[in-house]
Image (tube, rainbow, N blue to C red):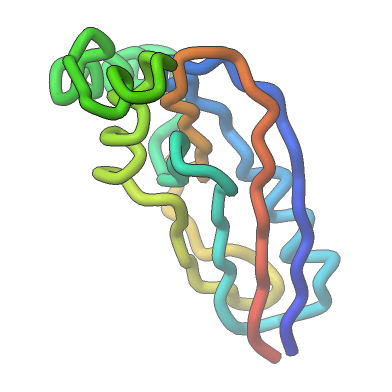
Length: 138
């Protein structure tokens, strides 16, 4: 069986990190699938899905390290071509990836004690992001 559902959320850009664990868990539960996999995918080329211990200090640490790895002031041909100054956001999203797949057992996502599912919006402006959650199994 396969079940899919989309959610939307507002983000602030510049690697804004939002916890979506509760929403994903609710979709897994409502899918009726007891055992299988869940794939969480952000739609777009300037955002990522990952897991993290979602607490304020670590959220800021991640944002700071992303700025070190790929600075928002980095010159990019993309920004020069399109004039949108968001080439850095495409690079960050490419390095992190748009999706994750996690195991589902007993109609729940298998996560570590402090592990939450997050969407990271790397773009250079606030956005409304669409995330597609697909649950597969029996």
